[in-house]
Image 1: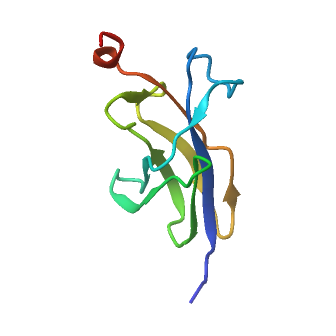
Image 2: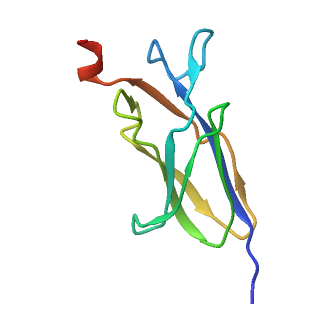
Length: 111
């Protein structure tokens, strides 16, 4: 039996100017739900970001193509449409900097 220890990690940022870069004044996304998806789009693991907006999925045994999904929190939505392909994952690969930049949702700008 093989023991794979792949991991994927990143962060969530509220991107005030929608430039896809963490700038001064951009806040981190605390408590935002992030989901690791398998090749068929099935949810493998769900987590929430920590107080610094970071998330990680470690020690999973899925090998192949995975995605990380972050839909936002209702007031903020992902600039990437909610999913980023993290790439093909092999054995004990670590994929970092799978970052999401959230912008104000259209309905939130009107209030």
